[in-house]
Amino acid sequence: MELVLDRVTKQYNSKIATDRISLSLKPGVIGLLGANGAGKTTLMRMICGVIKPSSGSISLDGVDVSEEMYRDALGYLPQDFGYYPNFTGKDFLMYIAALKGLSRSEAKRKTAELLKKVNLENAANKKIKGYSGGMKQRLGIAQAVLNDPKILVLDEPTAGLDPKERVRFRNMIAEFAKDSIVLLSTHIVSDVEHIADRVLMMKEGQIIWDGDRNDVPEDLENFYMSKFEDEDMEADDE
Image (cartoon, rainbow, N blue to C red; front, side, top):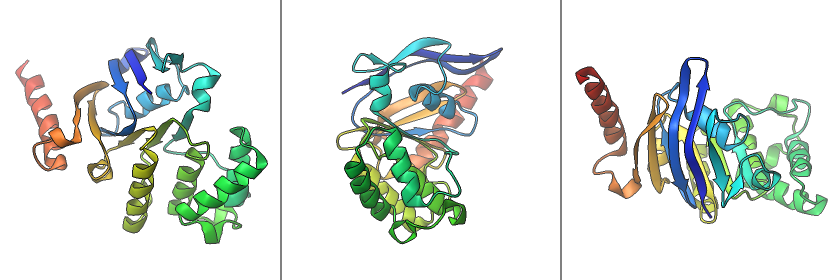
């Protein structure tokens, strides 16, 4: 299984949000690091088919991002995911499962399983409008993996989670990534430090570093900061 991005560019008028990005992604956790405004969300929204590239292509095993077969293989948690405030957590997951084409029996099984995994089992019948920010985020994680996606795209998924919830999230994603491509975007280095197999660093619409987690010769956060300092120094010298 391989997700291929070939010279993917997105331009808004005179601003280039992503600049000719080419990547080959295989199963495992890929951490995408970068400051706000680096182009991470634009890149992930193109991978999810929410917006179209200005040029370039995205495909999974030769299936283009625009095709239904690709969308069926996708799970996505955006920074701000939509929900119905008067739905209970259980009803919301059952509804999303129906949209994703799961049978009713499978939807019930997966809903119960995931509510337990994200520690919402006791709030399953509570309306979402009464959930805390962290509870909503955990529900968002659950809806993203309902269909056992081959590609799981998570944009700042640990926002609002407390330390224990972050550990639970990391364990769940590490387990899920055994058979899937998980792209985890964040500006928080510790989110990817313990679970990423591969690390991408993005700045001003470009990938400035791409390597195996084990290739990082030091503390990941220090290495991350040094790469951005190096880039800034090179720009000043030009």
